[in-house]
Length: 130
Image 1: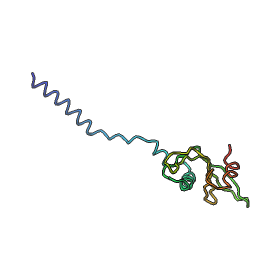
Image 2 (image 1 turned 90 degrees about the vertical axis):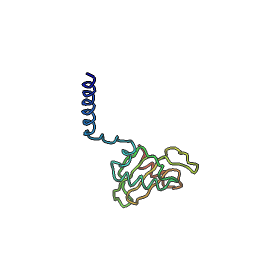
Image 3 (image 1 turned 135 degrees about the vertical axis):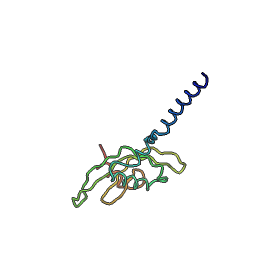
Image 4 (image 1 turned 30 degrees about the horizontal axis):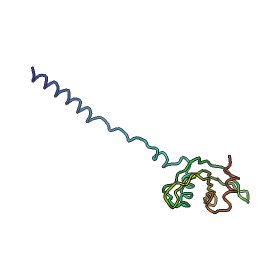
């Protein structure tokens, strides 16, 4: 009787192991970092790169509230402006808080408020105010 029970348990365990071994592996979970890696608009990626390059630690840049607006230059030619907010680190390694920025696609220039560019407040007011 004992041999029959042991044999039955071995059959059950063998079936469970073989079923588990043939099951397909589960896909890796989606992370928030992976979702942030690929912006929906290619111009947003270009703008993020340009804005991050103006910071002390480009790899630590945090972005929020990205949006694309239409603009026209002095000759009446249309262009795109990407607006948003960036949080960067200072020399001590601490985040400084989100500040507004604008990226002008036709001249590929990033303007971050508070970084000494005198045109930044006017551009932000003209194109990025809600």
